Amino acid sequence: MAEMVKDPVCGMEIDAATAAGSSEYEGATYYFCAEACKTAFDAEPSQYVDAPLAPEPMAEAAAAPKAEKRWWEFWK
Image (tube, rainbow, N blue to C red; front, side, top):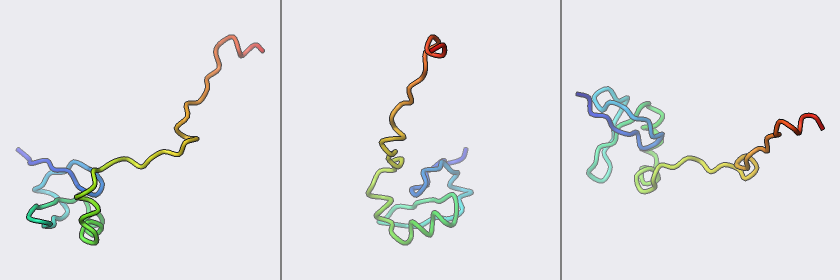
């Protein structure tokens, strides 16, 4: 059975055996889906290990729900 791990840079679930690369940091091994993720991690590993992976915050305007017209408002 494959050992599934999470790429610390992008959050993608990958098989450790077929990962594009790996790096050691503070006694732990981290696996990456692509060379670009490994390069970003190697440049500043504490940015990815110390902070939890979270989505980018949305702009306030984009986060506001769009008002939908109700069926009777189309006849006005």
